[in-house]
Image (cartoon, rainbow, N blue to C red):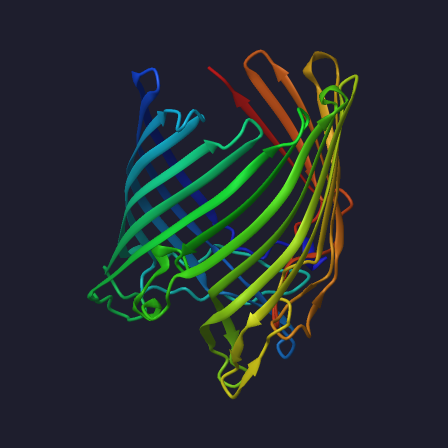
Length: 445
């Protein structure tokens, strides 16, 4: 019963306004030279009020609710991307070279509950909660974060032969972050803090090849390197200053084919991933505080297989399965009281197997019915693999119908009403939503 009970405050809400403007221009300077420019401006205004967590109190025999959560965002994103494409043969072989650059500035205002406001929410009964409005707390702007990105990229596609195509690319990124704390909401009287700055410079790239084996079958292989911050840049503070970029590399190879006049599609792929300096969080069993540290290395190897069949008469069947063997390769976990090696352990919330089956039928008048099951195998909820989250099978379905400029959709989720965990942890389990339905409509003009 508690699974279907809403313990939130009555005046919870989420309000958002999003505007995205884009201007794109294409200019052909010559038959084999093309210039493309895209400028964009996006704005988001969001206000959010609710309570985020519920904890059973066995002593008081009631449910302790988390404090009031207020989220305020006022963001504006401005950017421009310029690409130059050259199609000129090299030694008689077709070649396509792309040169480009990106400038982007993301100006973000963040906020929450003011430090001198009441945020406590009374506990309630587990099975018969008496709900009320939350505290009348106001939104407080707490930080302004400006992220500027300057990037330059180059990619080349060269036809070695009529059946072999080589691909190579490189990208340089310069990311500059400035965070100005507008108010410290942890004090009764909000106080300003100093400015925090951080910058990153990194090179990434990829090389690969595509082989046209027959008219119906292509094979490919690639190697790529990537890098990214340990967390979203908007969340960076001085405590994140010592963390380096997360770096990774990937090998991938696969084969794709189409048979039976386009009625059967199949894809098979294998991959090998290595990520270094990943950020992980550990709960100190003594103090109850979280300890952040970077993992030395995490490896993942696996394979994927996908099939799609269109037998005719409006039917389509798709099936896919993926196997992932993820392991910590170099990770000494700081538990607060000791350091223990987790090498060879599987990272939390990573299943070994995932499989999907999707069946769709298009009927007269544009009516379409689709749905299918999804299976996820067991996962671990902690780094030492002592907490197990059981696997599950869930079923989703949908009905869509077009009418003139309108498009109506009815979707059902978790139709089997499966009781399963989307996220598992040492002290926390996040249950998935029970059987639910949603209706949406879209109009084109």
